[in-house]
Length: 447
Image (tube, rainbow, N blue to C red; front, side, top):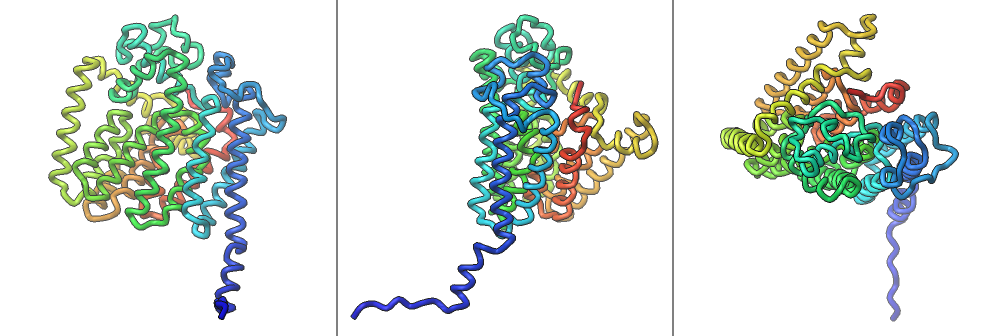
C-alpha cells in the first residue's frame, strides 16, 4: 500500500507561506542588498576619483600602489558631491537593516556583515592618511634606525611614504605594542608594508565581527542584530574600515578580553585588555569596568596592575624614556588639537561662540569625568559593565576637542553588546549626525 503524505494543518501551511513574505522581512532583505551595492559603489568610486575624501591621493597623487587594483575605474555617478549622497543612502539602508534585523536570519546577517568588511581592502584609505603614517613610523625604526617616539617622520625625508600623509612633525602617539608590531610589517618595504598593514586592519575588522557574534551569544542577545548594529554602520565601514585604522586592532583585542571576562576567565581577560591599552591608549577606558565587572575583583585588579607593570617595563626597555613623548602626543590629540565635529565645539556654537572658550572645554571635561565616575559606581553596584563602559566612552568622546570620526569605533561594539537600548539609540543618533552633517566633507580632521 503506497505511503500517504500527511499534510500539515492549513494554518501551519499558511504561516509557512506568509512568513518569508512579510513586509518587514522583505524590507530587511532589500536593505541588505542595497547596503552591499552601495558599499561596492563607494569602494569602486574611491579608487577611481581624486578628491578630499581620499586625502592621501589629494596630498601626494594617485600611484597604482596606493589606489589599488581598481585604479582608474570610476562610475559617472560617483564624485565629490555624490559621495555624500551615497553615504547618506548607506546610513538609511543600515537603519532599515537594524530595524528589521529581528525578522532576518542571524546567520545571514553574520555573513553579510563579514562580506561588507572585505571590499575595502581594494580601495585607497578614506578620510584619513593614518594607515600610511603607521608604516612611516615603523620604517623610522627599520629603515632609518630612528626611534619613532623621539623622531618625527620629517627626520627621514627620503622615506617614499612621506608625501602621502600629513603627520610630518609629530612623533608617534600609538602604544608601544602597536609600534613594535609596525616594525616587521614595515620591514618588508614601503609599498608591501602599506598593503600588509591594510590587510591586518581588515582582518581585525572581520575578527571584531566574529567576537561580537560570540559575545552576543554568550550574553543571550540576538546575535544577528548585535553584529549588524556594529558591522554595517557606515561610520564603522566607510570611516574606520575604509580608513584602515589601528582602532580596529585595539577593539579586536578589547572584544577578545571582554569575551574572556564574560566567560568567567577574568584573569586572562584582564591581561588581554591590558594588551589592548598597549596598542592604543584609549582602551584604558574599558579596563576598570572589566575589573569591577569581574566576579573576582581583587584578582582582576592584581592582574591589571601586574600586566600594566610588565608591559610598561618592556616598553621602556624597548623605546627608552622617549616613550613618554607618545603619551604626551596622545594626550594633546584629545585635549589640545581641535576639529569641528566635537562636543565642545557644538556647545560653543550653541552659546554663540565661533571658537569655544577654555571654560567650555573645562566644563565638558568635568562633565565627562562625572559620567565616568557615575558609571564606575553603577558597575560596582552590579550594572552591566559593558554598557557602563559604553556610556563612559561616549562621555569621553563628547569632551574631546580632537574627534576623528573613527573614534566612534570605540563606542560601536560596546553599544552593540551592552544591555542598554538607550545607549544604542544615542549611538545611532551620533553616527547619523556625523554621516549626515555637511561639515563632514568640508572639515576633515587635521592636526
